[in-house]
Amino acid sequence: MDENGPLRKPFSYQLTGMVHITKQNPEPWYREGLRFECIRCGRCCRSQGIVWVSPEECSAIADFLGVSQDVLIRDYLLECEHGFVLRDHLDMSCVMLQGDRCIIYPARPHQCRSYPFWAEILESRDAWLSEASRCPGINRGRLWSFRDIRERMLK
Image (cartoon, rainbow, N blue to C red; front, top):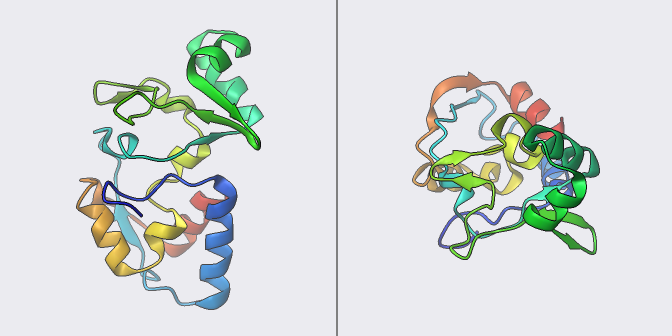
């Protein structure tokens, strides 16, 4: 975590974290569930970090934007050793953020869909509350059960 919030981690990290949480602590601190409702404010898209995009997600995003995968890769993604990541603007916000809105919200990557249920945010109540100071959707809206949270992380 940095002063701007948790670094966006690759999905494999989230899975590893979830396995660690459930094996090490079958009764996590959030066993009664957590409240979260995305209000589409875009704050989670403005922190330093990396959003990994799978080949399937590349295809879905390109289709949603109505562009070829070549155009998607050229204009919106960076290729790295382990695949593709979304580019950031100079201010570190996600390239898919325009104003306060994600332009690919219905087709956004799993990593974005699973926020705020990331291993580093669920690590402790303090980490959750720290993230809540940045995300106005945390601790409001729908009550997500432990099972809901686990399923959202693993989808």
